[in-house]
Structure formats: structure tokens, C-alpha cells
Length: 315
Length: 315
Ligand SMILES: Cc1ncc(C[n+]2csc(CCOP(=O)(O)OP(=O)(O)O)c2C)c(N)n1
Ligand SMILES: [Mg+2]
Figure 1 (cartoon, rainbow over the protein chains, first blue to last red):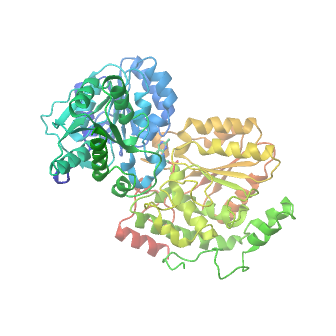
Figure 2 (figure 1 turned 90 degrees about the horizontal axis):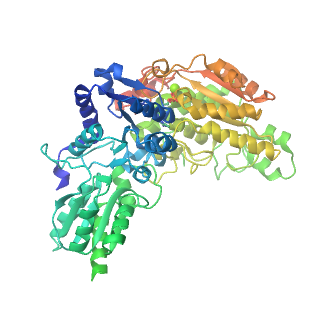
Figure 3 (figure 1 turned 90 degrees about the vertical axis):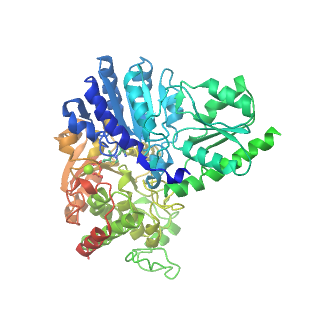
């Protein structure tokens, strides 16, 4: 089903949204690191050359400058790849942005293994874990281009530090233009009673595909899109666990510290039920993204197998 | 065995020739316990005549294009600008043993601008570290030739991909060599855009602080980085004076004139009491007219027609 949907790159939708935001809010400034076409902030640079700053690949410096601008009343958006915007300058983000709770908006593209052929150094599969580890950071992993635009708009008007995770390739667009994004509120995209599939980012499409496949085999799955990983909607997760009795989490990220870990914390405290995590277990390699998804067990069939394991453990 | 359309393999390990030309490596490895270092240095360099080097580099240029075309992605510009220097290093200046890539007495080469790994892979294959045929697996799943240099490849010293880290690694190698009383040299290749990274200058300061005259940095001064010309992104000049102010001996050479390259590298390697940097003036995309000085070919594969034209130019 998701195969037939139109595809748009979240980073491209972001670049266009940023231009609109620039027109609406003169305090928005954008900082880039020599990847400005890739992150699509070159669109903003073209329209607002005075509010755009390129520092070259010097991400530690960029984060410090952005912190200073935020402290001076600007709304700085920093864009680079997720490995260079979260992994590389982590201490600058931690001490310079998170601890003083400054309103720097870090919008990173090329997250996860969908970056494919560039290989493991380019695969940002720790970014959610790192971002979620920072108290006070809002962390959003949009599932498609429509949600990406909504997330970026939310970032512009939400005080404090914000991380948004975007992808390189065009991905299926599941939401219609009138979709109402609610920051911090998990979105139940499908009701179901036998098990819950809780997914984030691009894997929401995979979760839906799996739920479809399972429907035809008599299994009814609830599908929840956790676009906001921090603050986490604990209620929607606990309710799903209580009502369906088993949970599968799905993310294109390491199992440590990402969605699966965060859901496990909620279940442990509020609603212990069988939990299976579909996530990366370690570092990967170069390759075509679709082949990597298969080799590293993030495909719909892997989600389906996890659901069957949960059903078995339930009984 | 090497019938891949990928040119001749210099010193390739081959079952057929057990003790042929260029096999000084084997002999020396066996005699390693008996011979002491100065002699080993003499034997382990391939000592190619300077007149031989441009032909090897030309073949590597062709292989760079074949790899990137076959992969459908990769970084031709910085691979073509660095290749004359890599050829001089591996075929003349450095002592290495392709049959024993981790031989303790080897000179180290660190490709800090690890996106330009096609140049390194082509050179390592030509020198016999692995079969030339393997080059066509570049960036494919299950390959040893990752999209950014990684230590899984025989002959690759450091995993990279995040700019700015190689010189620090080189400082570590050079300090260790001194501690262990070993006389090998450490060469680190940096991009000019990469010099925007603050870590480069932290490493530079520490190298001169410790008087690391066994360390040589090479800056591939091709004047282009990811998006644009370096002058537009972040001014670097006066670059030589910057290095000198950080306590380095700086040399400037034409990075495509083999005589100058060999002489510059050898001179830099014999500087006493301080580290040396070779600033190599190069042309990004060198050897392919439409890639030369063209920022568009920093990180883009040629299409079929461009590929054929490029090969024809390098015939
Ligand atoms: C920390 C980090 N930030 C950003 C990038 C993305 N990036 C890849 S290559 C490149 C430009 C490098 O330019 P230069 O060092 O001049 O390399 P060359 O011209 O030799 O290819 C950038 C910004 C990166 N690899 N690492
Ligand atoms: Mg350059």
C-alpha cells in the first residue's frame, strides 16, 4: 500500500518551509556547514542572503555561534547531516545549547542508513539517542514530508532547543496537507487489538505495510506514530500496551537509546507487556539503502516476525 | 584473474609469480628479523622512477572514474586532485609491504579527507594491497571498499568520513612511533575545505608542541570544497603562514608536477625538530576537462556519456 504513495524528500520540504518561515519571522537566521544544497537551506540563502551564514565544515564552531545568536534573540536554524550536527559537536550542543536551554533549532538531514552507499561514518544511527539524552531538548523524527514541514514550523515557535531528524531519499507521503500535527502527542494511525506496532520516522510506513499484511492473516495491529521522541507521549504507549497486550517498536536507529529503549522505560514503569524491538544492533556498511534495510533486518517481514514473537509470548 | 577492464595491477599478489619483479617485499618480510631498519627502508619503498609515476597515476585516474561510475555515487573531484601525490607516496616515497599491510615498520598514510577514498583504493590496488578487480565493488553491499575509507580495507590506516580528525590520529601515530623508538614516518592528507575544522588546528598546535618531525601533513589545495570555492565559503589564506605560525615548516608545491611532488614530500620528511606541511596546489577534478575546477563534481558520479568522454580524455 505505501509503495503506491507519492514520494517527496523530507529535506526538500524542509528547505521550502524554511523560506516561508523566513518570510513570516525576521528573527529566523540559518547557519550551514558547506552542505547547503544537500540540506536545501540554499533556498533560504538565495532569498535571505543577509540572514544566512556558512561556516564551512566546522560544526563545533557553528553550534557555539548559534548559541550566541539564540542568546541574542535570534531563532537560529542549524542544518547539516545528522552525524555532523549531533554526533560531531555533541559537547558544544550539550554545554552550549542544552544546559543554558537556548532556542537553537538543529534540523539534520541524511539520517540513518538510508544514506546508503556513503557507509557507516555517514549513517547517523545514534542521533536520536544523543538528542534524547539532553534534558530539555525537543526531539522529532517526522514520518514524511508533510510531517517534516509541521515539525519545522513547531520548532520555529516552540521555545528552547529542538532537534529534527530528516532523510536524504524521497520517502512515501502518508499524510494529506490538512494533517494536524500535535507536538508531543503520539498519533494512532490505525486501531487494532492484538498487538501494537510503535514506529518512528520513515519506519511508520513500514509499520503500516506490516499491519496491512497481518490483517489479511487475521491479526489486528494498532499502529502508533511516535514522531516526538522527547517529550514522549507516555499515555498513548501505556494505553496501547494495556489494550493490546504486546508491543513491537520499529526504528531505523540503534536499539540503544532510541524509540525502543524509551518505550521500554514506559512499559517497565506503567504497563509491563511483551516487547520486541526492530532496530539496528550495531554498525552497518556501504550499500544500496533497500538492500541495507533487508540485510540489517528492518524490512516489513522483520516487523511481521517480531509481531508473531510478541503474539507467542502473550499467550 | 584481473580481467575487470580495470587496467594493469602493479605488484599485485599473484599465485603465479612467487618471486618476481617487485617482490622485494616478500624477501624483506622474511629477513625482517635479521635486517635492521635503514636497510628495510631502502627495500620496502618500491622506488619507482619518477618517469614511471605519471603513467601509474593516469591508470588510477581511470580506475577512480570506473569505480564511481559503477557505484553511481562517490567523490571524483578530490580523488583526481590527490592522485599524483598518492602515487608518489605509495610508489616512491613510503615504505610499505602490500603483502603485509600491517607490518610494524611501515610508513603510515592517513586519508583524513576520507570521502576521497576512490583515489586511495585505486592506489592501494595498483600497489598490490588487494586485487584491482575488487575496485568495482566500491560502495556496494558486502564490499571491503566502503563509501568513506574504513580500516576493513587492507592498507587503510584510519576510518574517516567526519572531516577534521585525521591529523589528530596522525599525531597519535607519530608520538607512539617516537615512544617505541621506531623510525617510520606518518603522512596525513587533508583537504583545504577540511581546514575549516577547528580540530585540525588543535592537532597542528599539538604536533609542533611535541616537535613531531616524523609527521608530514599534506594539504590538497584544490580551492574547492563541497558546495563552492574555498574562498567563498571560508578564507584560508595566507595558509602557509598559518601553519608556520602554528610551529610547522611549510612547503608549497605544484601537486601535479611529479618531480616537485616527490621532492616536496621527501624534503618534508627530512625536516628536523618540527612537523612539516606540504601545501600542494592542485586542480580539483584534474585530468578530466569538464570536472576540472568544477564544484559540481565534488561528490557526483558522471553519467554514461560523461564517463565515456572522461575515459577518452585519459586514454
Ligand atoms: C565533519 C564533517 N562535516 C561535513 C562533511 C561533509 N563534507 C564531505 S566532503 C566536504 C568538503 C571537503 O572539502 P575539501 O576538504 O576541500 O575536500 P576535497 O576538495 O579534497 O574533496 C564536506 C563539507 C564531512 N564529511 N565531515
Ligand atoms: Mg578542496
